Structures are given as C-alpha cells and as structure tokens.
Length: 35
Image (cartoon, rainbow, N blue to C red; front, side):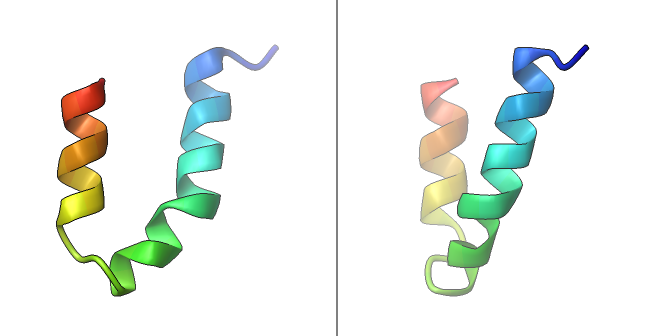
C-alpha cells in the first residue's frame, strides 16, 4: 500500500526534478521550507 510520502516523492521526481535544470537551487529550498 502506497503512503503519502511515496506518492509525494513520485510526484516530486516527475514534476520538480526536471525543472531543476532551469532553477538549480530555489525550488528545492522553497519546497523544503514548506515542509
């Protein structure tokens, strides 16, 4: 059974990591601040 953490990590990998090429640090720091 998938947990919310697994679902979030999948979502994060699919939608946020590809953008890190355009925004190398800011999205990661913003996300970690929100969580």
